[in-house]
Image 1 (cartoon, rainbow, N blue to C red):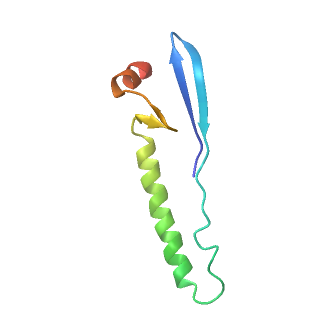
Image 2 (cartoon, rainbow, N blue to C red; image 1 turned 180 degrees about the vertical axis):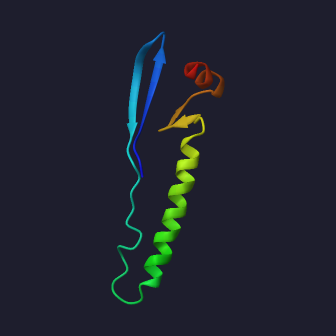
Length: 79
């Protein structure tokens, strides 16, 4: 996964910055020995989820860490 830095810029000056850390979960940590196919299934499922997250990372976000930003203002900040 990846970390993402979000900055709020007004008038060319950065007024706020927050780094969102990568999400990580050991999906097969509770499985011991036995058939490996169950672990493989969980790893493939996690891989699909990571692809989905990367697609979502390219979209403008209106909410981040409990802070709500109106979409119009967010787009104006990006200009």
